[in-house]
Length: 417
Image (cartoon, rainbow, N blue to C red; front, side):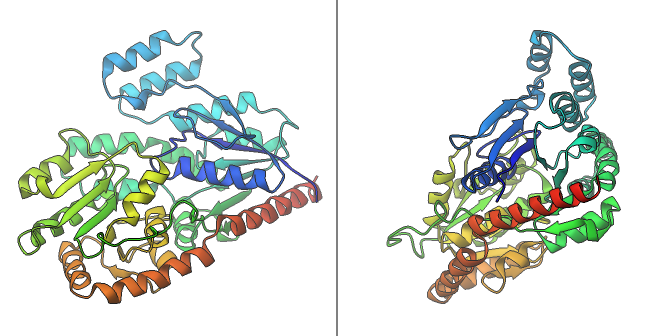
């Protein structure tokens, strides 16, 4: 079988926060293990990659590593030489937009020449530059979910006219993404729910969208050899990699408020960092639950896995998930799970989690109390869920599905030449 020269585009690839860096690491590693040559082309922050995988850095200004104007201005002034994209990136960010996808796509368009790669995988930039690249190199465009859903929920929970104005400005890139998605020849998404939403929100024919789930790293996310001392200790974990309404963290915090008097040992660990002075910090102060909450950030994948594995219950209270890595990771660690019955989550959990309605603090607190009172029952179900994840979400198997799809794309492109 022919070995492919594969390029992977990722406009930002933070290795230990959010799903993009995780996705780039896993898929590049596994395609390399299948014998293909893999090159990742990334904007900052750059990914952590396995040995033998080339990384080409496309350095933008990385303005969103800070929200301090003086720091941003310093980044801009120190860039030598400056391109039109640098000016565009700085001034669009200055007025509240998010230009990284567009400028990354332009830089990639100038970098990638005909015959550089057999096929390119784009990790959800959906930038105008892809249209030019697609003229000479087939592109598999990965859309984990349409970002229009993020915009919808942020607007839904915003009461301020000024805040709503800036939300709309931030998501100005969606016009580009909708335009480009319609023009991409091959699209991949990780769930049936995302396939439907991409078709509805971006106007893409569902027949163009292939579904291959993401995998869960069951070598890292695995139960502890012994959880004695951890069981029934009211230790809860959730993930909120971004302090945004979409993650539904506020509903979990309210549930802790309901239960803290009944279970004074209850404690919630949040994998993520709240915005300083933001809504989450204000809500914690308002509910007077700071002593029951701790935040942990900048953890390695192994450290996150340990936090899951030594917890009694995991909660995913998201209002939407294109593919919920925290759902699968908690289940892979053999932890009883409470999750919202939305979007792709039921596709991952099957019958092995307590599914609740979104935006319902009372259902979270009721589910927690039921688990605390009947822990052996829920632990037994968690063990079945652990096997479900291992059998159905193995990256090694899914990489073969990716490989088959890439070969089909090449055959299709060659047949149409």
